[in-house]
Length: 326
Image 1 (cartoon, rainbow, N blue to C red):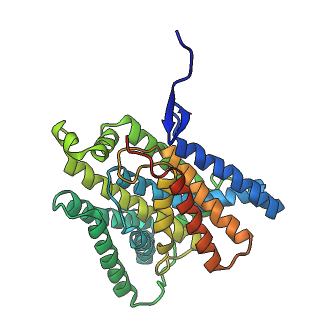
Image 2: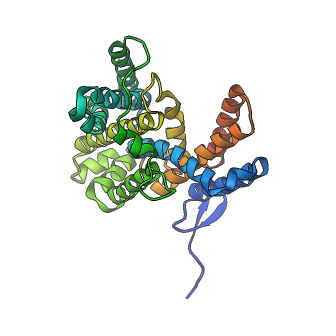
Image 3: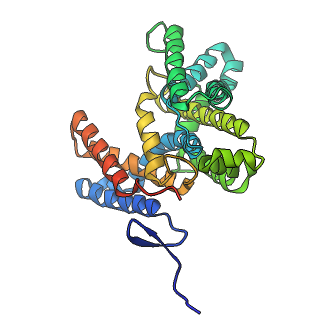
């Protein structure tokens, strides 16, 4: 009997079975970035700095969790920027209604995102409108509503103490609460995707929606609920960002659309749906955060950062992003 380890061939290279090449590549790039960062700054590998980067990554990680679930369906959510902003603004706005409003600020922000996700999901699943069009439209509508609400000026409402504690506090000494929040969401996402009928249905729909429907899955309901969950997570990310900055800001979510999608895809989730692991998304989030941090440490101008950031993402996608779905 042969004892050779089973392998999977990907683009001419044999990988051990069960190991996602994209995940290994992402973690390899993380190690490379840590080395490069240490060369430019002695403090780059300090525990304090790395924990700070994890705190920054946690906001993107929460948002990317919902983005991953939508992409696993074979769909896309382009409403992330203003769902993030609306969640932050509405949570801060609730705080202006006294102690009761402050107590419900976080749930109000999350509910706002869930409602936008419900619109996205209903239009995609039941009206059969392409998700790219629907989410782009809801992003524009949400932007308009927020501009009307603020009168075009910067929001004046501040984050509640609870929001600031969630984002920047330390329930465990030296470990930011934002990291713990992301950890809890990560564990819940892994359980949901791998141990529940709902999660397996997401993968099934992403692989072939027609086959999933014929097997008895209520595909429309699953698609709609996934968009609701994605909207809630994006809004929660906005709530955390508002807590981190102590207030909401116009267009604060604009910087998270490309990184959220890039983190998911760089982590090996197939853009056409049906395949991907949350571990890969975690690797993608950390990779994106470290790359942005290193470009900042190197004191490169903003235009140069954007060029390098985009070029690195394109290069990595070309490296393994053309794999077949099966």
